[in-house]
Length: 500
Image 1: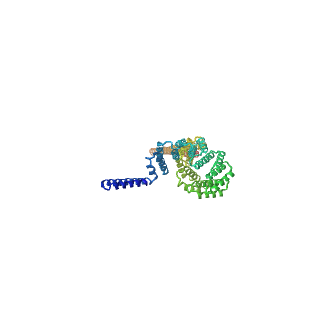
Image 2 (image 1 turned 90 degrees about the horizontal axis):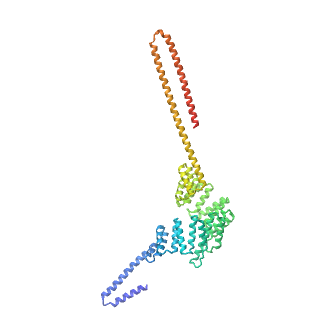
Image 3 (image 1 turned 135 degrees about the horizontal axis):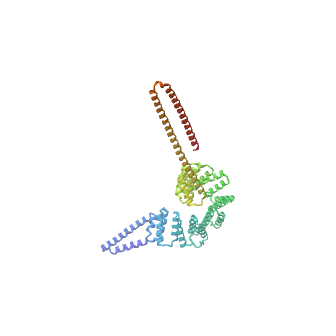
């Protein structure tokens, strides 16, 4: 403001001093006008820069490129423009490679994209640039745990929990991060079935937690560790403590319901599930747990309906798709179960269980060759899985037996066809030959009879009688032979049918 007043005062003095020289006054006025126009344009452009954060930080790249690129990357990441955000983070690091926050934020971006090894490198660089950056240690431990590198994860969590935060900015945040590291370490121990270590870690977190830390999650997970270790009484106490601290804590409602189910108090368990549904969103985890609960009670139709509702908004969630497929199979809907198992295997192709279950449903649906391929893929991912090996062996035995039966049926069918064809041909030939011989002989006898004289009548009559007797005997004999042949053929055919 002062600079503007100074410029205005100077222009006024110049204009007054040159009152006798109109040209100079004109120059002064033109200069003031140009100054006003240029600064007005500059003001308009600057106002446009402030319309969005993206344009604001983009405009600062010329002035302070490292900081501007870093801030622009955060904005782009918040907008979901992951590729552009990554480019911006890397541009910022090109100008200044020791910015710990940029390395850390880049690590989060890479972790969200499941590029875990790259995320590890970014977190390590953040720690190298700022050794007391607790959040980098915490996220590094989480990524190690996701990669099942548990020893490195444990080390990272412990390093985070042991950092001296004196002199750091925002000590409340760093103190909470240290407790979160212990919380995640306890969860990792629970997943590894090291329940006593998990209980000890949660108790350590409770003792060290600052006043401002929200304790309901730790209390609930401590109860979960007791529950899985078989200590139901302590588990229930800690669940109640979590609900006392935060009455609408959703995980505590779910775990309390599961505990009551374990105690065979089904009615109370369902009431807790229904309370959880009132707190949860329509596509939340409480609905999934309730659907699983119904399935375990044999109420498969209700379970499937809830899974379908949740699946509408989470169609790419592997666990949800997989569990819905299980519910479909249990309800007897094998066709839809097969479709969902296929989707689950496509969503997470590196999970052996997905391929094993897909193979099982294909096995049930009679698609044996596809089932065999799925079983083999499951064994490739997890070679020591005994259930998959057993299923594959049963499938291959079934395929082998079916092939043997098919070959036998083919052979017997061919044999029967050949036998019947030969029998009919022989029968036709025998009848034709017999009729031809009979007619020829009869014609010859009649001709002879007419040419003989009356004096030989008695002799011819005797011959004719003898001929007729012989012909009749031959006819009876041939008829008996034919009847015997047909009886034997029919007996053989019946015997062959019984064998088949």
